Length: 263
Image (cartoon, rainbow, N blue to C red; front, side, top):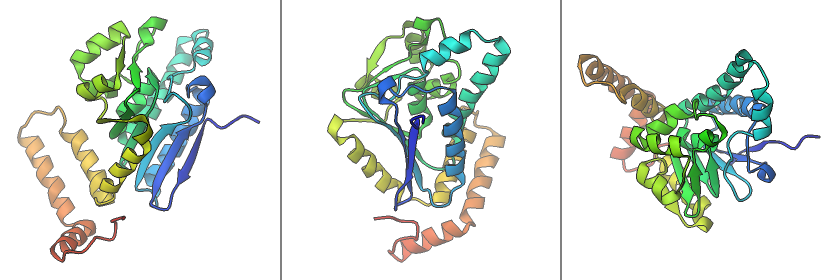
């Protein structure tokens, strides 16, 4: 019986913990993991029990990206077969990036290639102080194509022009300076740091958080003009009339907690 590629658990607070479970291959992923994880993420996105999704890994390393045995096998296939395969990975990254729930990556050890992509696709990424990152594709004669939109959005074009081309390894501290990682903590404090952020997330309205993510995607990199101004006005008008907003404002004025708050 094949060992599962990852475990999924929804705890009593509504956090879905997704744990990559292949430490013997540094949590590399292949076509099976990509397909299964995409299905799970889509399900979590519509599951009303779920308040947030946390991605983490077993073992010393977060993820080595694509499994090289899988890559070698795909290299012998046709371009059309490789396109279908690449679309599946692109679909996973997009699903994680656009999930209508807050997402967080907890990164330890090494994150290579697609592993960096996973961290970039999450809303919040926290790294252990000994973690490091490598966009290693060019060393294999490849390019970080499907993760590029998310990595460049996180760390910027200028940094990408260095690290996509050199495949140098950079530290967690450098990743934070570039914007790829939000915070760096002692190795032993990684999960506690994640839980502290979750407590902050639990104070926000779930529908408002989903709408806030949509707002970011709608506004980022668009020129400030009549269309954008009108779009933002329409968004807040809709949000103000929502049941969640009425409850949140009433709770604030009454100095009580809204129903979505967790301790």
